[in-house]
Image 1 (cartoon, one colour):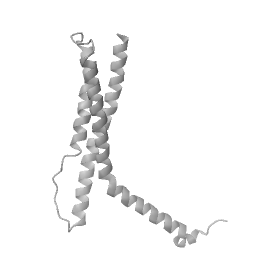
Image 2 (cartoon, rainbow, N blue to C red):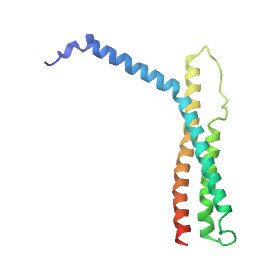
Image 3 (cartoon, rainbow, N blue to C red):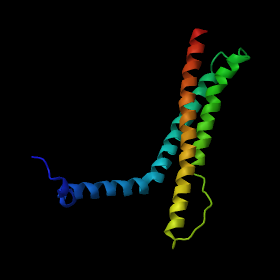
Image 4 (cartoon, helix red, strand yellow):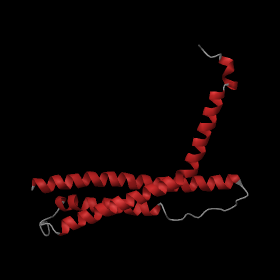
Length: 147
């Protein structure tokens, strides 16, 4: 049976769906800063572990004194990229100065959006540098195994 086109306004299913998606929208806005902070924590943890493992592996390898030119750059790239990931992830937690006036919702909204954009920018930098650092680690392993 086809619903009557004019009856959507009074349809209880539409009302329930509308309330549901409004709640989802409110929750996603309210929790967006927390989710960016959590992602930054995870990137810090994983990048820190990879940095430590890579540095430890290089320190105890037979590469010391045998690298020069492009091969040196290939082996240094993961270190630099992981440090960029760690640095950008840390910047997510740096406080931002903003105008405080809790009586104005417009100022509160502007501050929230500014904080969100700043954190999102740093997360994007950290994420991309992490992806590139993992790719560079794969290249390093391939170069090392190739001899």
